View: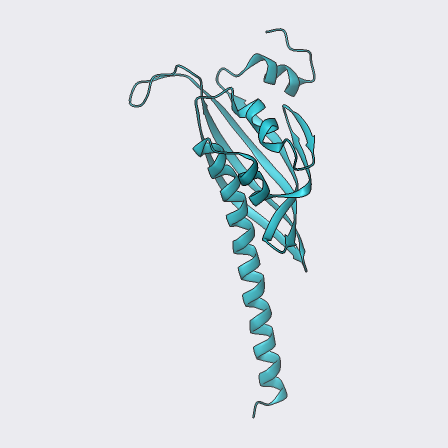
Length: 173
């Protein structure tokens, strides 16, 4: 028979395993989202595997609410690029039961349409920023309820309409 202190220790270990599992699931969720963007396969099914039905997105090109139309919204800004490559670091995850906040740094490379394939040199649009979000545990696992991108820096030729939106101006080209 286990002593009360042994039972407490087992309960603490079980709680720690749950915390680590949740943290891993949440970082996998973020990675799945960005991998879908890089793979160019962000469709409605993928959106539902990442976001809740009542998702709120806040990105430099615009905002979107609700799961319906998320794939189309995403194509609206990702469709400007031939390919992308997202690199992430410094995940921060705060758990509160079936709710969580998550954030991570990002450096993204955006390849313009018609750019020559590697190893040929070409100009790309680079972006550094921070994603910040809130997640909720659902019957299907963790899903992002809110996601925002705060751009910290950019380099290289961008898309004029997106740049104008980011600057809060009206696009001229």
